[in-house]
Image (tube, rainbow, N blue to C red; front, side, top):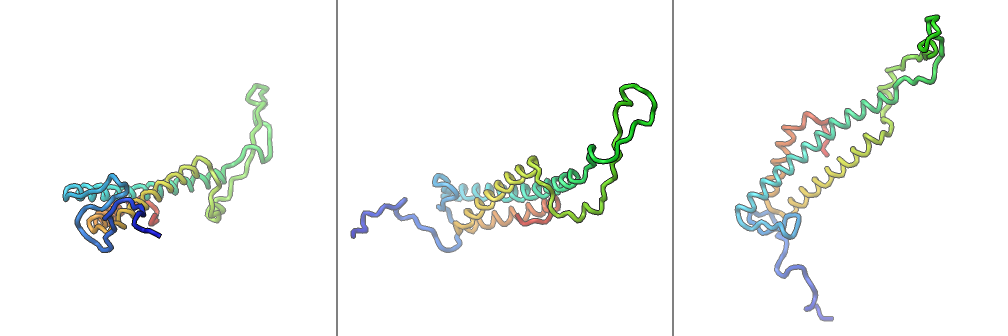
Amino acid sequence: MDMSDSSTIDEGVSMIPFFHFYGGDYLIFKAWRPVSAGAVAGACIGLFFLALFDRWVSATRGVLENRWRHRGLSLTFQPSRTPGKISPSPSNETSEKSLYMKAEVPLPNYQSISTRTIPPFVFAHDVPRGCIHAAQALLAYILMLAVMTFNAAYLISVVLGLGIGEVIFGRMGNGRIH
């Protein structure tokens, strides 16, 4: 069997298996291959801001999840208008207002709110939550692929972006890593 005619993407291109600072690594796409020092610096700045954006998305997701959780629980414990005793209006008028009945609904036990651990499924909350999670996973994988090039400048840019982003946006979220 002749192996000389095996096809490769690019002859002479191999991954450098150690951390380095020089360019020439593919960054996400084949067309994105910073070679010069200026191009590598530009890629580092872009990765820094992408990592910063990742932390902002994480913090925003934490804020939204907290809001969605409170809204979901409040929907669970909203008083319903159908159950309860129906009594006639206190006035003896035969106007249109007296034809409506008032429903006496007992107040919900708010101690039970803290015992419920899972909010109900709300389409308007759970679909955006899924979309935000998918976008956050995409950002994490893009950053991971950049670091996997073994370019030390990319690694430093991503770590600095994540760290500074956590300093800026970390108190907004709920303490999640992703």
